[in-house]
Image (cartoon, rainbow, N blue to C red; front, side, top):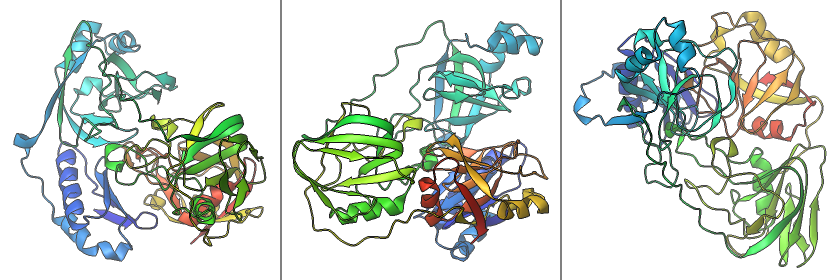
Length: 486
């Protein structure tokens, strides 16, 4: 196996496995890692595992020895078996059947005749990668992904089966649809599928109605109303760690330094919920007297009935903290919104915001500085640094990159010279982390943000340091930056 650091406080273990034994051996390695590092988050990929919140790489020496000794055991008796009703009327059913030289009925029989195993959970909350489909269904993804795949869509791609728990862009071949109940944040165990579970598909003529999602509890008495909005504005806090194994990204503020500074300035805990304002301006009407801090500036008093204007400035992401903290619904331990995975939504004109607590004394916090141009961001080598040519590794740290306009809280593209992948793009999903710089086949790096997918198929050449992740959030599209080895 190959073990390496994975950003600050993370380790990555490539078990270098292939074939039928991969899933069982990976599960055994993940169990060994979780036992040896009980306070870490363990995320499973295809033939690889990662742990986050470890400390230093040297702290994991004993754990890695346990992983090397881990052996799969027969856990069939404890596996949960799920039967999913499927209506085989997918958008790709007829085309895929024709490509295989089969009828749609024969395609349905192939798919429903297999018993699959959940090898990993990732991509989005509750999305299970199912291994064990017949070889005839090992087909590539669509050349052009769809802009929207509906929740409950049943797909195949790259040897895997899967069900979309929520609507999402996607490139899998859609063969049918089932009930979209694979993930519900209100359940005690949000994800329906766990690694090692078995899944069988059963052909039906019609589906039962989908479960009604729980209605979030109302917030406290409103203290602010959104009067005007010309930005992506969300409520953010310190995030929701502990759920990556279920496919839920950690979320949290794009700029944790600004979040802590603004909260401390108004007497809140550093990770209290505040407003994140990305790429524009917002106006808020105060329904009561409040204290606020913008980006850690000394607190200011806002009178009842006064309008608070937050203009656009040289920083792309800004943070507005309000005394007492904001009272958004708490989902999986966080009040923060991760709209890309269906947890919360951006604010809109007319939305009301309540307060979670009372005002406390202000405290000194970290300094939030506007980054210079070009900004300098620091990174560590990633787990796939070795996949890239020496010229590409050098280019990553020599070039002046531009923050692309193509980006959001999931990830930000960097425009610059393309990076060549010596060993080809990875075919299988691997664990991902915030700050990971992944490189797709076109060679344009993508820096993953707080709402990143928990697994991905592109190699990770480097990982931004935590302090630099916040700096990236401050950079507007078009800003220049350099990467340096930490």
